[in-house]
Length: 126
Image 1: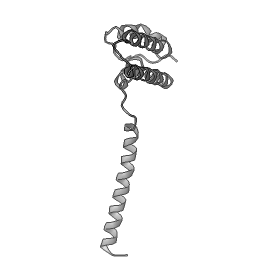
Image 2 (image 1 turned 135 degrees about the horizontal axis):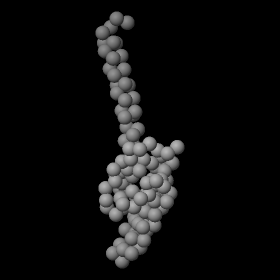
Image 3 (image 1 turned 45 degrees about the vertical axis):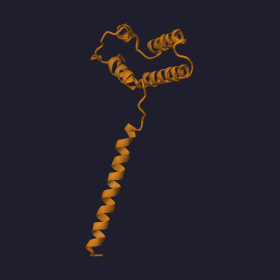
Image 4 (image 1 turned 45 degrees about the horizontal axis):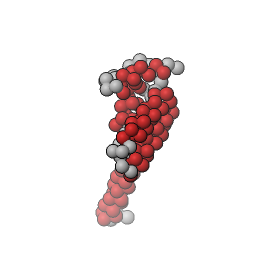
């Protein structure tokens, strides 16, 4: 098989397969759909140094909150403003109690009031 055409085809197929594999690997991280609370989640993880279990809990709470907001949108949202506020406070309290580590709760309370919180530089307690 000294044909140049054969080697060009082998090179093209190899390049195609390598590109396909790289595309699959790079797209794995991008497969997660962007949620309305994606930026909020990222800021919480960075600011409060959440461990993987806490991130899972946070995602569940935010997904539940998003579903409840969507169900309210289907009805007259202006008439349900008080209900929306109640649901928001309830989910914020869940995040505070079930996700934010005890040593970061005061920072979280400041954060929800609109004050900036810088990422923690101290190591996590063991």
